Amino acid sequence: MGPGLSFDGNTLRCANPLLSPQIVMPKAYEILRSVRERAPLPPSEIEVQALWFEQLYQPVLNTDDGRTVSLVQPGFWNHGGGPDFTRAVARFGREGAPGGEICVGNVEVHLRPADWNAHGHHVDPAYEETILHVVWEAGGGKAFFPATTSFRRVPQVVLGTQLVAPWSELKPLCASLLRHPLPDAVPGRCSPALAHLPAGQAADILRAAGLFRLRQKAQRWRWRRHQAGPEQALHEALAEALGFHANQVPMRLTAQRLPWKKLRAMEHEARLAHLFGLGGFLPGVSAAKLQAEPRQWLRRLWEIWWKARGELDYALLPRSQWKLAGLRPLNRPERRLAALAQIVPRIPELLAALKTRNAQRFAQTLLAVRDPFWEKQATVTGAPLSAPCRLIGSERVDDILINVFWPMAAMEEPEAAGEALAKMNAAPNGAARIASQRMLLSTLTPKQSREALIQQGLLQVFRDYCQTDCSQCHDCTFPEAVKTWPGNGVRAK
Ligand code: SF4
Image 1 (cartoon, rainbow, N blue to C red):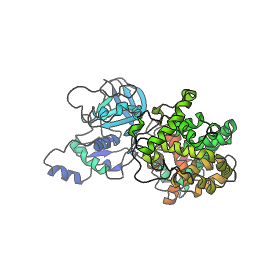
Image 2: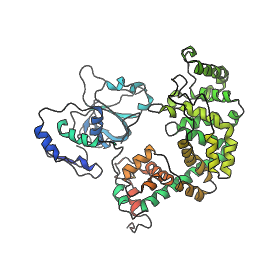
Image 3: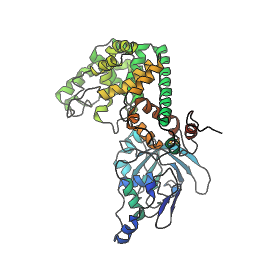
């Protein structure tokens, strides 16, 4: 049974404040049960995910490799592409042996073992960090052992036989949880401390964390500017921002392996050929299979790339570096590389705007980036997009202002950069959404929830505390930091 849960045959109670309060059996449930004539159908996959999220299973589970596993935290519920739960913390051991090895990683949920291969996870690098495959039932026939792309066996748990109560008892709870929007994370131990702060205090704490993050970024870019020069530092910063979370690292590596000076000296098509070739996006498919426009595009670039690739062989990025699963077509790395190719000649203009703190001119320069071919394509080989779309839209430009322009401006004027971020709105962000659900930030006004500086603060707290915690908040020091925050009237003893 999950932590703090008890079941007396009629009512499932949750004494653990970290779990959702609706886990207590609704009164109407007893009526439902008394008039029910048949056992409910087996759960759907999303219901098994809900069982996992609410930890409605035995405290110690048996795995198919003869070990036991107890979950410290079930992970953040991922409703997009990739594994169903990220950053779960599990303790693996042997029955009867205390302690055990702590593992942090992802959890994938299916109805049956063979779904792992049926969904292609055995060849998908996005599932490489899976530490547990949770299935509803073992399924008849031959035993099936899921494995990652590197042939690592993923331990498996059959949940249907290890629940805290029969599925028929738990189904109504799942139904109440599965009302939209689905949660991403359970509230953390810091949420009561934040909820009891005086008005405006939670926002101030997050703004302070946002300023800290801004200064950290400024320091990072100061070093890079010192090492590589302002043009190269900006080239790398923009490449990283264009990678937008999923592909920040391969985009930055691309900008380091193809430095600004080298790219600037090339014609536009040569620049594209180098960026796409180095990134592994000039496919080895027969050009004859393509539509006329992509075929010609590919032929022109391939003519340049096959002669150039020898000298860059050592630097080629493996395709596995790129995260493609679950990406919207508009966020595909090919479109980001095409945007980078267009930005390279504009770097001096962007630097001039940065020097004069002219965010508007910086934004307009980025918005002016056009590429008729890539505004219609998400990949070289794919069908054209249903409607043409700018390579860098206004939301992405705002993101670049928040993550590149103002942090770079903060190298000289951190206060002014902080004030500018406090006046900007930030687009919704997955990590910030999880962080605000963990902290239950109901004291923030809607305006404060959109504020870029506060969002940066949320991301910093999430990175420094939530993403390093392996104790379901137990060992986290953030709640104490909140209580002793200067000005809230509470002091540490
Ligand atoms: S890990 Fe810390 S900061 Fe994150 S939710 Fe738990 S108590 Fe809050």
